[in-house]
Structure formats: C-alpha cells, structure tokens
Image (cartoon, rainbow, N blue to C red):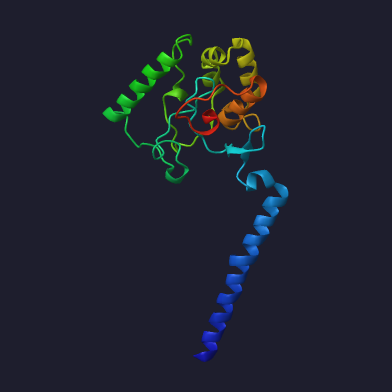
Length: 205
C-alpha cells in the first residue's frame, strides 16, 4: 500500500510540474515572444501613450464626433465581466422595443444619413463586446461625424475606408473596421473633439 501511495504521489507531482508550471510557462513565453501585443490583450493607446481600451473588446462612444459600435447587452453595456447577448427571441416585445428605440435615436442623431439604417447599428452581437463594424455601417455615420468635427464629409469617409479590413485570407469572415482603432485615427487626423458628458472610453475625453 505504501509503495502504491508513493507511486501515485510521484505521478501527481510530475503531472503538476509538467502541466501546471512548465507547460503554462512555455506557452506564455512563446506567446510573448511571437505575438507579444496580442498576448498582452491587444491594448490600444492614444497619442499620449495612455491605454484607452483593447482592440478586441467593444466600448461605448456617445460623442457625435466618434463612430458608434453595435448595441450591447453585456451587463449594463459593453461589460467585459458579463459578456452575453440578450437571448431575446424574434417575438420578444423587449427586443422590439429596444430596436425601435435605437432606430429612433439613430435617426435623430443622424438626420443627414440615408435610409435604411445598417442592420449592425440596431442588432447586438452574441457577446455584447463586438469591437468591429461593417465598413458601410461606419460610413453611414460619416455625415454626423463630419458635422461634429467641422470637416468635410469626404475626409471622414477617407479615414474610414483606409481603416477597413477585408476578409481574412480572402474568404474568411466579413469586411470590417475596428471601431476603437478608427476613432483613434479620427483623433489623430483631426484632433480631439470638445469633451462630451457621460461618455465612456475614447469618447469621454
């Protein structure tokens, strides 16, 4: 019995060292060496070097001078500790009421934008943290952003188009633009807008 217990303890110790210490250290070291930026959270910095978020996690931008992302049902909105969708079905009154309210808000905030409103600006993602938008959804907001920043609309559209990414490997996923990266590019190109109240992330500056 004692011999069997010692064998079991040695096996447990070896397994613990290999899988609980050496393997995590090796994979973490490889990730840091090969993909350091991604391994550390794909953090985004403003022109002052201040961390303003992660390129992988969406956040709220209430200022009219910024591109706004998809609606979020994660916690109270864009809560990385409560990632989820609303799970409301297509017949849900709450889902319909939320979508109707978003449509009304978008029309009010974007009176010069053409109809229809892009689906991505009304539909929440499954995670509630989607950091990307289809390029057409970002371009739809260009008139409002141009007016808020007092620049020509075609200059806003040019920044958006330059930041647009195609399908991975030419066939995976959909064309997209990262909202946080795009808003940082707008600040870099045109300067920060005047401070806006009750706004998170980059838009709160």
